[in-house]
Length: 431
Image (cartoon, rainbow, N blue to C red):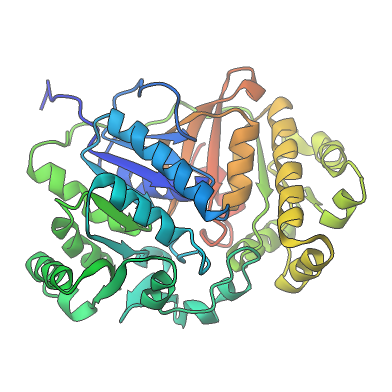
C-alpha cells in the first residue's frame, strides 16, 4: 500500500484528557496511526495520521462552554479533511440533567447536517456493558456502583435512554441486544426503523467485544458517532475493507524512555483508591494532599516536592489527593465542590511540573480532571500514542517546555481504570 494518499479517516472530540488517550489507545491497537492534540490546535496537522483526537476539558464545565469548545474542535477537524467524527464520552456516561453529552451531541449533529446518531458507552474489557439500555459497571448497575458518589457527576440512574433524554431536545430510542446479536444488517435496519419513528439518538446495547465488532460496519456511513472508547474497536475494519488502512504501519512506536519516575493522583474513584492503597503498601515514598490545608494558605505543592524530592532517584514516588467518599464529601461541604476541585487540580499540576523540572520523564497521572490540568501545566500540545498498559490506558510521549523540550512519557489514567498494581506495573512496560 505504498503511496497511499494521506487522509485523516477519523476526527475525534473527547470531553476530557484521559478519555482522549483511552480512545486513542483503541485506535492505535486497531492499526490507526493516531495523534492526540491537547485543546484545539491553532495550526494544521503537522504529522501524518489516520486519526486525530482533540482532547478538551469540557465534561464538567457549563454546557454552553462545552458546546462552544466542541464546535471549535469540529471546525478544526473539518479543515483537516476528516471522513467521520467521533464524540468520545466517558464509559460511565458522566453527565448531569443539564449536560454535557446531550447538548454537545445536539450541536455536532446540527453542524454536520445530520439527523441521527448512536450513543454507546460500552467498553466490555473494562467491565462497562449496556443491556436493555441500562449501563452496568461489572456486575452492578451504574446507579449502584461507586459512580453514585462521584463528586462532580454523581450517576444515580442506570437507564441511559432516560439519562440522555433529559439532556437533549431530540427523541431518544434503543437498539436492544437481540438486534445487535443479529449483526450489521439488523442493526442498520433498526436504525432505519427508529428514524422513521422520529428518533434521532439511539442508545445501543453491547455486552461483549463481539457486539462492538458487529456494530462497527453499521456505523460506516454515520457522520457522527457518540460513544465511549469501546465502539472504536469496530471501526478500523471499515477502512481496512476499503483499502484505506496500511496494515504494514507500526502504530504504537514511542521513543525510548529515560529519566526518573513518579505518579500524581487526583482521582477519588474506587479503582484509584485501591491503586493508591496498593502503592502505599509497597512502602515507597508518598505524600498525601490535604485540600483543607491548601485552602488555609499552606503551600502544599512546595511541601510535597520537598518531601518527595530526595527519594526520586529510587522512585517511583506518589503524590495523591485520593480519598474515600465520606472524606471527599466533608471537604466539599466545607469548601464547595468546584472550589475544592480547583484547589486540588492546581496543586497537583504544580507538583507534576516540579517533578518534571526535577528530572522526572516517566509520569503516571490518575484522574481525568487532574490529567487535563497536568498536561496544560506541562505545556503539552500534542502527544504520540504508544503501547497499552491496561485496557483504556496507553503510554504516550510528548515534548514539554517544563522538561526543557525533552520527551516526557505520560500515562493518563481515567480514575475508574487499571489493575490494583497499576502505579508500579505501568513503568515495567517502558523498561
